[in-house]
Image 1: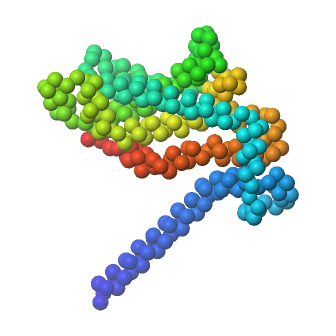
Image 2 (image 1 turned 135 degrees about the vertical axis):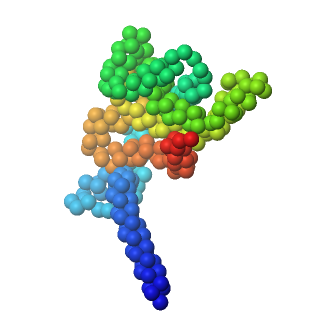
Image 3 (image 1 turned 180 degrees about the vertical axis):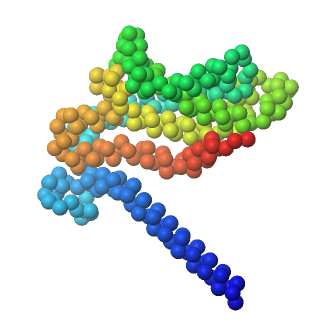
Length: 287
């Protein structure tokens, strides 16, 4: 009887504990998701209905897509989408090539001064971002690459953090596989592509998605090196809408533009969230 009472008390504590945890998670989810809901709600309210609200309404009975049309006609937002897509795809592709090759060299190849070079390489993470932006701007300007896709892309084709993350993953692959491949006459490049890349695919996918998000949200660098609207990205488009006065006056249309820009990243994350979690978890394992 005493054992049964103890077991029942333990079950009640477990149920209460789980209930409290789920309630806290639900509250936290509402806090995190509410700004997105409010942004989406505002984007489907008409301009007159939004301005007529003395007290903010948390729903609307007459949603409209007019704001999205106005957002895309106020500025050439569709062209900015294309520019951003080109910038994101090319930058991410080049970054993957540089990152994978550099991580492989640090993780598997033996060369004189490798540890010193890698230590100095990691020390670059200590340099303030503002200083890097300034030096990159001076370099791009002196090379006459402002208002070009080359000037936009080149400073973003490498990342010390991504190289370090991928290097740690490559280092977890047993050396015996590499030595066996060398005995069979496999080249380093073939070993990298056929063995290391498939094994570390979750981390590579995670790095790819994070880089895509980084490129899509890029703001400071495009604002510095582009003043020609032919090379504007979506972040420039949002700022252009705001600076023109249209976005400050027509808040629903401004929110519609923000929603249109945010949707691709949200869909990307929802589609690959399991890959992202798997890649981050693998990056935190040792041995």
